[in-house]
Each structure stands twice: as structure tokens, then as C-alpha cells.
Length: 193
Image 1 (cartoon, rainbow, N blue to C red):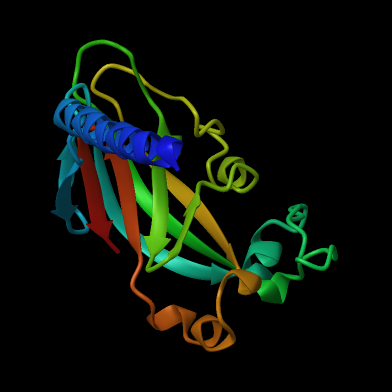
Image 2: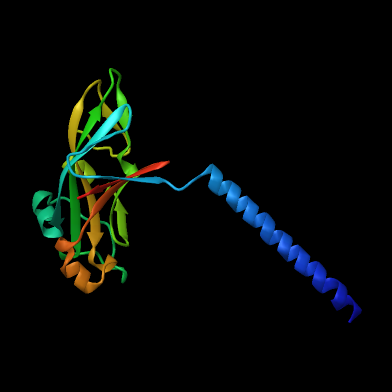
């Protein structure tokens, strides 16, 4: 009984001090690394990144059958949750047409994998298997080289699958709003498609 009278206040003090110290540490981290600034953009608006710029010109939603007609050699390697191969009817590709611009007199490199497409709770990065098919002159989305003052157009594919959506959402996928997001901390750019 005597120990309970001594231990309970000590445990309470230790817990209170832990909460206070954790709160202070959280405050310090949040001061050093604040939330990203969200900047909204529209189609055909230039996003100036200093040495390079990006203009998203338009987007279209293709289905897997259209992809197979364009590129018969393409086989999507994604599997259904049950382990079977996805069929073309289960695939949609958000294809974004963009212009990449070098604003300098020197060769620059742009990394496209920092961009992702999103719609409500769905998001996905560039489809690295489709990107080279749509961009045979610039097949590497990880590093696109731009010569001095060069402008090039690229098509950036983002793949989605029926099992990532509720059935009715998949049926109505063409009426969904999509955004392209670029995260360059401390700024997050969102282009409405």
C-alpha cells in the first residue's frame, strides 16, 4: 500500500513530462518543416520551375483495348487481386499531353516521376512500361534531357485498374475529375485536368 502511494504520483509525473516533451518536439518539427503550399493551375498554364517549365496542354482517358490497338506488343504486368492477369477491359489510362521547356542556355534535366495523377482517394505514378511507347524519342521518365532553350512535347500515361475502384465509380470513370500533382517541397502544384 505504501508503495502505491509513492509509485502512482511518480508514474503520473513521468507520463506528464513525456507528453510535454513530445509536444515540444512535435512543435519544433512543424516549425522547421511546415505544410506544403498548394498552388492550383489550369490547362495551358505555364508552371515555372526556374531552369525548366511545364505546360499541361490536355488529357484523355484511354481504355485497355485502345492501348492494345495502338501498341499490340504491350502487355500489362499487373495482376488482379486473385493473381490472374488483368484484361484490357479492366484498364484505363489517363494520358496527359505536356510541353517541357528548358529556360536556360545550358542543358537541363527534368524528372517526371515527381508527378502523379489523382482523383479523390485514387492516385498513381507514371506507368514506366507505357511511357517509352508513347515517347520513343524520350523513353526515360526518370530523367528527360532538354538542350538549351529546347521545348519538347511528351505524353505521360497514368494507369488505373477496375479493382482500384468501386464498381459504380469504374462505370462512371469518364465523369470523374482528375488532377496532375507535382510535389516540389515546399510547394505542391495541382493542375486540374
